[in-house]
Amino acid sequence: MKMTLTGADLLVRAAHDEGVRLCLTHPGAAELPLVRSLVREPGVRPVLALCEGVATGVADGYARVARRPAMVLMRGPGLAHAAPNLHHARRAYSSVVSVVGDHATTQPAGDARGAAPSRRSRRRCRAGTPRPRASPTPGGT
Image (cartoon, rainbow, N blue to C red):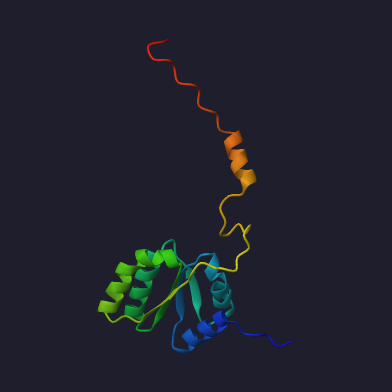
């Protein structure tokens, strides 16, 4: 059976062909197909970072020391956290490739990865929270 390639597979393969061997990731739900492709590609090592700032800083340092490009995969809102390190990488002529995801528009409405808590869980939280007592009357005891 022939495996069909996705856009994520093609992106990772192209990055590998251009010399990328390390991808620092701080993915969200929309970037999971790209993470799957990174895992399937043996030549690019995915490394999970705790925040976008760490991912871009490590990618910049790796690119400077190893003298080869590094890739960063992050969520769209995290680009603001990554901007200072990307600025420093650009000023140092580091080869850092940034892949910034967007919010998926095809996610089902009740999907736990991107949806707010369900009504049932909100009701459970409210049921376990004591209701505030009426405030005492002014001057009363």
